[in-house]
Image 1 (cartoon, rainbow, N blue to C red):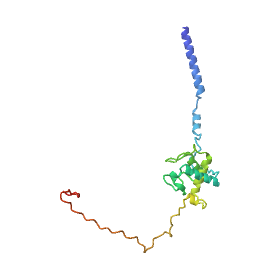
Image 2: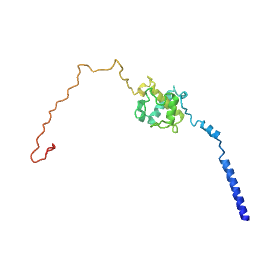
Image 3: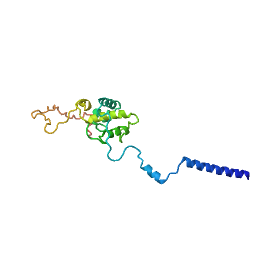
Image 4: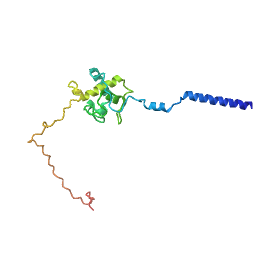
Amino acid sequence: MKKTLIAILLAATAALCARAFAQAAVPRVDVNGAQQLQRVPVSGLHIGPATHVQNPYANDPNALIEGKRLFQSLNCAGCHAPGGGGGMGPALSDNVWIYGSDPGQIYLTIQQGRPNGMPAWGNALPPQAIWALVTYVKSLSNPSPEFEPQTKLGATPAPGPGNTPHPPANKQPPPLPKHPRPVPQPPKPGRPSTTGGR
């Protein structure tokens, strides 16, 4: 009987201890607290128009040079082509921006990546390097006479209306050389025909 009483007391003590530990380890959550968690932003991204963020290196020529160096060393040209002309990735040298042309939007594109191929560089690059890349990428779409040959690779614009080049009217391409057409030879006796005849 004594052993049974001690076993019951030990079981009751263990149950009380386990309940106290469970209450201390996992606090009670009411429904209102869960609803509050749904309103806590998980990231700095918001649906809708982005707030305008200034590039701290926007007019810094050293940042432009560093951004170009990073663009080349990180093989950005592998997808966007040298000078940002576009290839497997979108062009960066025009005014068409898929994810926004604001410096903050370009920063987030580089930092977080984008679907279908743009890698996230936020874990590999410090913010200063990303801003330097933003400076260089923005320079690709803003024509600057000082950097034009480097960014656009010296490309000239396509002729517009009224100045389309035409070949001279009297200039004709040279004629193709005339070759005599081979005459088919009859098969030699004793050899099978190669023309498919029976």
